[in-house]
Image (cartoon, rainbow, N blue to C red; front, side):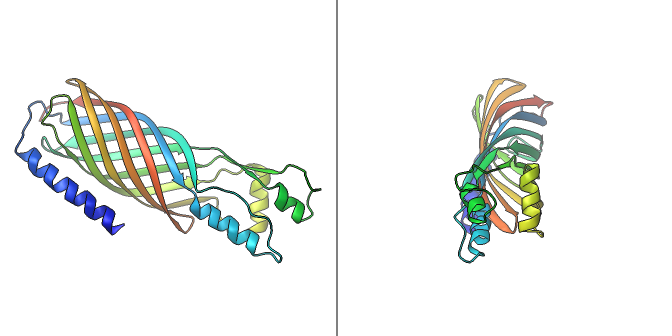
Length: 234
C-alpha cells in the first residue's frame, strides 16, 4: 500500500509542476461527469470465510467455491470545482451491482440435508457503494487530450444481498455475521478526457479502490466511461 501511494505521489507532483508552466485558456470552473462503472470486487475475504466455515467441521465439509473476484456493473457521478487550470477538488459517488450463484450441493449432502446429487444453490446479489472526495490534478496543455490523476478518501458500503433461504441459513450457521458492512475507502488512479466541444468531454478512467469490508482488506478495481460536462471559466 505504501509503495502504491509513493508511486502516485511521484507521478502527480511532476504533472502538477509541468501544468503550472503550461496554462491553457478556457479552463472550466465546474465539471460534472456521469457514466458507466465496471467494478471488479475482491472476494478473497469471502472465500477465506467459506474455507473457515467448512474446515470448522470434523471431518471438514466439501470446499465451497466463492471465487477471488466478482464483476459488477453500475454507475458513477462526480462533481469537481477547479481552483486553476491544473488543480481541483472533486466529490465522487459510485454504485455497482453483481450476481453470484454458489453451488452448495456437496455441502448440503454431507450435512445430510438433501440426498446426494440434489442441486442446492445459494444466490447472492451484492451491491457496493463508494462516496469519496479529494484532489484531482489535470494536464490541460493539449486542447483535446487532457489526462488527470486523483487520490480520493471516503467510505464504502456493501451488502451481500443473499436470497431469503440463504439468509436464513447464514443466520443459523454464522449468527454473528452481518450481510451489510461499511468501511473506510481509498481511491487512487486517473484517466483522460477527450474534449469534444468546449463544454463537453468524453471521459475514461481507471482506479484502484481499497476497502476494509467484512473484516478483510479488499484491493478492488474500477473502470469508468462517461461524459464530462463543463461550466464556467477560470
